[in-house]
Length: 260
Ligand code: 13P
Image 1: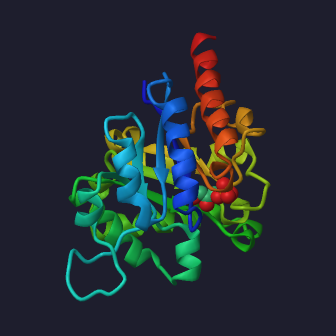
Image 2: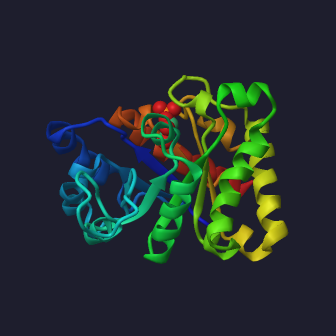
């Protein structure tokens, strides 16, 4: 069975005091204590290497929140895939709606990042999802497929093998109101079917995460179906005690599901 993947996306939050206080707490409570889940932490770039030193030889992995398309050279302010690899990163989030919105990232740039990550042996987490306006106009499926097609166009369907797609409806992020599980199931199934029509084996090898106002109190609803293979969590990953409880609760809920 594939392990459920929980990623803490700290976005632009945290400092050395926060990390020093919490990273050992996470390590002590989580490392080797989970049977069905894997945990990954996505801190701001500047703290990745520091945290890596704490997480070496643990089951907890590191995720980067973005990557540049260049490997090296005169690109002030950027961080390359080789550097992320160098400091022990396993997954890289790309196409997050906050990068699309605040940094004008488009599907073409995101597809370049996806291909670069895959070709360098790390695992891309492609975020996709509709805005409130697109939802109102019933464009969810179209928007998600466009984002996927752009990557296929610049490479081929095999590029999606062993990658991660995170369905993150833009309107649900940070709103305190998550998407309805029936709607999440519908869109993930739709994407899965689409990819499977192009290559069934590849479709089976993709992890599907959900992100958007996941918290300790609402996680039960997401386990009503086994369509979701993990969570991408923002705000609720910053309250560390609660987050540890959320991770442990997820592990327990999956164990109950497995038994029934
Ligand atoms: P929230 O959990 O704060 O809604 O953020 C979700 C998200 O953007 C994860 O990438």
